Length: 595
Image (cartoon, rainbow, N blue to C red; front, side, top):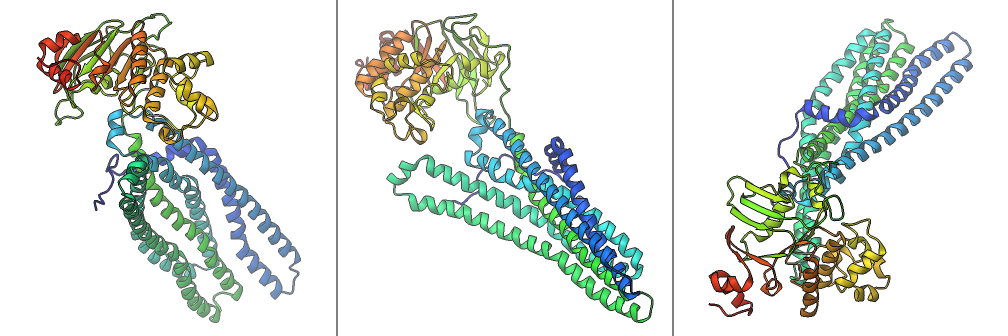
């Protein structure tokens, strides 16, 4: 079985400086909330710092026969107040972390839905979805908790060292020697956590890719008896995620136990050296006890520092994968100027289309799909594109819609290069019916008004009647508000095609593109929709790609394409008589005898 990794957006990881810069960009809008959380955490840490000193004072007071009630009350108040402030700070940080994740997800979703088609086709959708879900989840911990933990841990650690130095410098030296030794070993582990986490997240993306592949063709999987094979494919990706996750957990466990190990070793060393110093009278017993309390207090700040480093390594992997998406090429957002006017506005009427020596290929080094393609489509009427599979017919529509940019030559709509229109405004005047006539999950009404959200009930009723969908609506249990299932799974292929056509017509476009839009219709519905297209062509420019030539015999003009070139242009009878390829295609479809 092929278990190769799913293609990724960009294999280049961010440097440490780029990671910090990217992290700061997410945290910056919430910097005051993070500062408040940090302040609360420091207040809580200060309460802990006072406890060993209070303990020393209490023991000294007991030794001298004094009262300890005041010390106990003050110590209790400090503990309660510190805990309350720390809890509030934790809430502020968690809320801020959720806000950071929300902002990251909004940014990613905005970019994903504006990706250029070429980028979308290069990367599996499941991998992109995992960046929005699992990768942004990892961002939660590093964006706030890691920052605050690192800051409070460092401050508390430094403050504890100052207090310990005030108690006894010799014992502080013993403590630092042990901590530095163990800490040095921990720093060697951190890059391993980052690598294992990034590979684990990539494997999670592979799981999404494998699931999207199987669920997107669910009936085909079942009809082919391929359930076990697809399960094995998903399980293989899950095992890779498990393997890298376990490796990350192993190194995290090593790093996580290092702080406790450092303190325990330091305790033993301080106990031995400190006991000798007490016995020699160099320090008091209360000083040794206070020092040992500070030593155990160090567990928390050291633990916070280690956790912050671990979270940073995990977050760095997530930030790197998120940043890869942010580097993908996207279409510009809609602008208010430069729009191709829609019907009924300042420049009503159908649009004209002209290709001038257009060449196109997907990437340098790949063969050309179009080679010096030239033709002209005047206002109104129907123009059909026919030719063998792979001739470049559907690519004509993709270039008009600016799904791709022409490699050479010009594509003109209304006499202007489409590159001079913003994609959003160009497409606002075009109705496009794709070859597979996709239907989105939701209700029938939502699908119909998807391209024309302002359509009225009268508009909907009119287009339902024209596309013969009114009888379907009458049969549905909730009429227009009936859910159509995932990708229209509750509808037939012909019904999905009619819905796609109705959706395009409801937009009242100036240019209508139909890519094999009637391939799944029966003869009666195909004839009815041909009449609809003929009627629409009186007020709209209609371009049709068809493999069934019966749908184009009534076209005003037919463009015959072969191997990425325009072979001939003319009417049906003319082409049957003059073009050998068209005559062969026509004969195959029983439209006319070959000559």
